[in-house]
Length: 396
Image 1 (tube, helix red, strand yellow):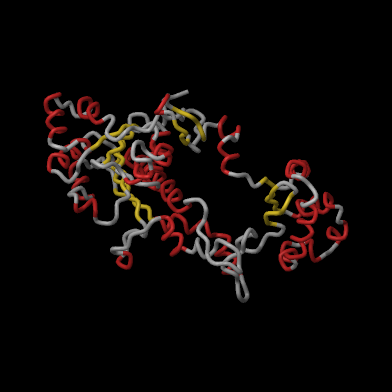
Image 2: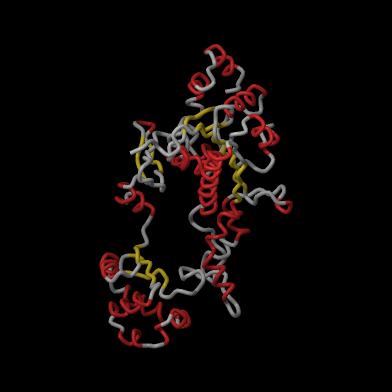
């Protein structure tokens, strides 16, 4: 097996909360050295802790990074950051628009300093005159992008998606843009400024909903509950079982015929209207009632076993507590424990798996500024007296 895919790549992580830090989490999992650069008080995700330690969310996303505490608002801190830029390949940031420029660290400055550098910027809405001055977080972008209005049941109010889908879609897309820019650099020798808008990143996830609306002859519901977002697949729902709930869908005709056989409903299998997806959608209430009547008489394990044997897509609705102990996620390294004693924490692994490049689990997330001295000493070659003076002046 060869070295990690991004071995030797140095990333300066100015990311905050989820989108930026998840981008650098993915880059670190591919072998990049990530310097987590935080202001004197630490980045905002640390604030969710109890005051004495960082919150679990910070630990999940920042494990394995090196912690550097640096005040970019001071002249010396600004200078030190540029010194780090001289030795870096990538800078990742998801500040509000204009913040990096006000710090004197905008693209023009960084590109002139190091033409090979890739600057990756996460934004809520991207560079556009209509979005100027607008700020966004996951829930606000869910609101304006249609995610919120498409989540929930038709008779209820809009509901936020339970997962932070916008932040993590944006972080994933930003990592892809960084990798593309690094690949392009191998051809041109030059870096570039890449940007991902959160709204742009999450919009394609509404493909079913948007397709349903575009194909509708008349009114189309904003929210479809647990039914298919485009109302074009049926059965497609969450059905009751004796000990919980089960998600079941029939995407292909063979799924529907197999389900009818399991349910003992030859009448449904023989109905020519129900033989087509459009016909089942037109009689969705009847189909859902029939499936629910069958599942309700079974426990989850029994129903799931029958459905799997018939090759019908299905899965139990699990709690987060059950997910955290899932043996598959643990065996694949997507969830792991790292560190010892007070530093022990649960961390995310990487969904990126490469056959010839190892993806390694991280060590603990850094304490605020934990690796500052080592980075200044080993990367910038500062003397101990200089480092002590920087601490005294509050720069680091």
